Length: 156
Image 1 (tube, one colour):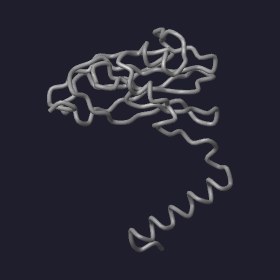
Image 2: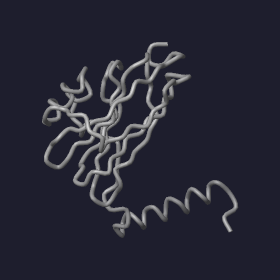
Image 3: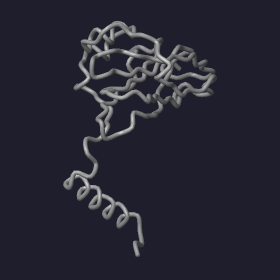
Image 4: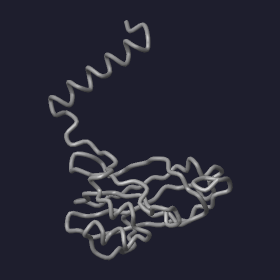
């Protein structure tokens, strides 16, 4: 029996290490930083971001879905989600149109995992948010939703 938090953490780390070493996790999804390309995080629009990553023009699609509140009571922690049922998706992104950096999160997708991600982002003001799916043939498909922010985020 595990008695304390230290033992739980130690046991969890050992199990995770064994699973990674044996390949049970496959290629894990992760939010990208420098691997996403500095230009993508500096982009001010979705089209600029797609261009910085070397992709085509964005197109709205019913196969991509976004989960976001209609009204965010606190702009410092706004829950957002992106999902798609499309096959052959290599990346999923969450974009916030009026943030200083439009690219809020980028997730690499492998065939072993479901393209369904969620996170929390900071929003300085009411804005359109986008869930974007990039396919293996570099098509950029997206869904959008307006989120109204009632309390400060990035700016306050």
